[in-house]
Length: 360
Image (cartoon, rainbow, N blue to C red; front, side, top):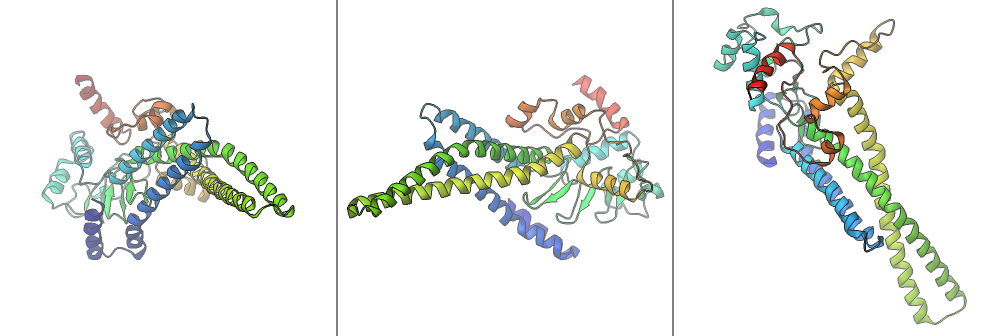
């Protein structure tokens, strides 16, 4: 599927004249995804080979079960983040949003019909000012000049995938996919579970590393004393083999420890930023940076403007992203639940949605 999608998108780029940076990011995608899967698989295999044998036999099934839960959750959400459409017009979510917006009067019937017939353009728009949405009108639809389609609020055109994306956050080269309305929950859970797995790996590896390092130092001291006392060659050879094996074990544990520490620092900062600024405040990365730039350029420095896409509280924003499940259930129990609807808290769409929910 990755190969088919890549070939089609590469032909589209040749026709559309995408920038070299966009083409390079897209071409790097499959290799980066393979590297990510290989790195995660390497850390899991090294943990099974070098960490589990140092645990008490009675507790090994528990440690193995914890590793399996974290690994399965990571690969489940990572694969879905890679393979799930971010929210392009090719998926039903865009057509549903356009239909509901037309029924609610947010999009004129003439514009809706023009897009369905393929004749929509700046000249055929029923409302000329629709292409110039102002910041004071956060729920106003506009026109995307690059895709030639009606552009919902919070949607942006992604230059890498060459598609209009609902609630576009950013293009992630590690996913070979854009991050938007369709796969944002999978993206966040992938980052969170990678960080949790790194913390778990660090805690699990510290003890075996310290004990194995101490054993290696003792064996090395014994070998040195034996060689100084001119002991038998056979004894020295056996000791040298034991010291070499202990050194290899210490090196493997050190590499695993270092990888976990790097993941905790890098992924922890990334996950914390996304959780605080994006998930709990219901902002995309683009909206967060736009707000920060507005505050920097204002004189005197301005405070944050009210977020029109906020659902009212951080708890409500979390519930909107994760379907009302608690933190533990959201992070540790895989779910293929559809993304939240509507994609943004437009009062008109929310009111139109409530009768349908009550009837269901």
